Image (cartoon, rainbow, N blue to C red):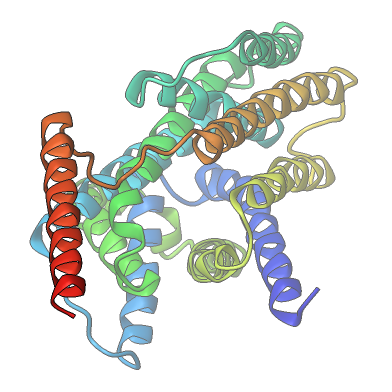
Length: 348
């Protein structure tokens, strides 16, 4: 394994650790310091400033107007809608319940592929979906509702809605992701996010405790972690890692997020360990694994069929009448040459 591959694995591991740890930190910010709109406005503004500073040391790159529209749509789906739903979700549930939905990313991808790309849903995939749903049911049935303002069913539903919009964001950005530098793309992504969220955020500026005289360093450090590590560093390291790692490897590391989030939340007292949590995680993970491997097997089978399919002869085929005419001409030419040869021998 080369140094580049080792660094790629380290980069994707750090990304998922940063994002996993951000979940309980976001809950702290929303519970003590910021409203969801204020949190999103500060996050988008802080990240935008960092990317603008970095781009000052990079060559300028122009983005086509149509692609800017796609990035704006991606920003609305992947940040404004998805992150706002995630922020509200964490007000109703714990990081453990919230992060459990991340295990269902392959399930969401499968349904979106069936809906938008008309991919078939096999019996094997259906079995994986049933297992994942059973795992979520184990978790939710044993969850208390309306305790200290918590409603786990509502919180998990919002988290699932956030996951759907994140998947739609990935699909919508696929056409422009390979065209431009990731730094430039992300700068525009958060520029549009700031434009979308700032009217609501500025309207609620007086409600943000972190921006008032009651601010404390603990809140500032939590917000700096979200801006610098969970967003700026993650968005910078992710493209670097994906240059060397395939999608399957990246999806395996994605499961680090809920593990880190759950351990951190339990460690700081945001949640308590319950036996149904690992049981539910096992069900959901096995279901997600079945769906992922089924999709990968279908892709490999399709590629294999294309590789072994008989290729048509690309050489031009002659019409039968044309072949007869050509044969007649060749026969006539042969007879003429024979006659000339015989005449030449008589003359000799």
